Length: 342
Image (cartoon, rainbow, N blue to C red; front, side, top):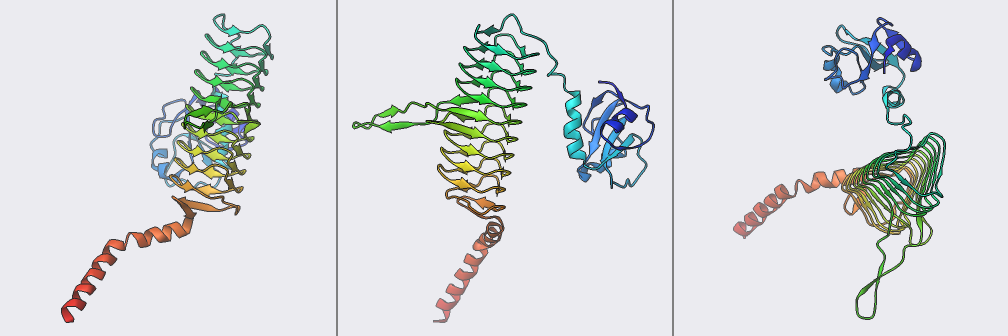
């Protein structure tokens, strides 16, 4: 990509400070930038790098006040993070149509939209439907009757089982599995576990992103549903018939047990465990490594610990917990004193 600073400022509706003819060719981290780099400053911990960076241009928030002279062109915007989110899409090249690789195996009944790309050794099964401008990388498996929307990106190694539905503009990273069997077994009279057939599917809404090695199980009956705009990190387990509301984000290594219902706009930290059949209210925030053993029905709640308690109550309790050794020592001293006086 090649663009002038002036063109870039106009693109992001920013205010330019510096030479509008400065050429920008690629994005970089502010501490690693070189000539031609575009970087950004959002976290002020990185401000010292601004005064020594070799970047050609830097995005800053509109109210930022520099403490020293700045060599790169500065482009002031209302919200750096949102601007970067939109702008960096311009630098991506993986959505460029590359057609159907001759080494891909596509069933004759598959319906492909316009400008679909399919990489080598990808297998698309009977009656699948792929929307326009979707980019499927090599070595992907797409099962029977799968429906995939428009402008979806599917990275190498992804497996999408039969009957699953993927919305528009989703991104599914390498080795994610969508629609694997839920963990459903019942012991017979001899205590031998018999498999319960998993007859449902998985439905991803629009603008969902699924991280690498994340697994989403199909419903036993009905659907496991991930709402519009949800973002799931790597190495997450979503069990059968889980329902997740719109725009909820979940960090790595979290696990959600079967039939749990997670609200919209929730933030769930890494390694959080949520027991089955629970309800989590909208806009709930759960700190990393917390364990949720009962439903959280209050909206806008913050929770921490295992079993989890209200966030600030946990912090106060932990502060007291750290004092226990000193308190125990003081108690022992008082006991010894009472014994010596008796």
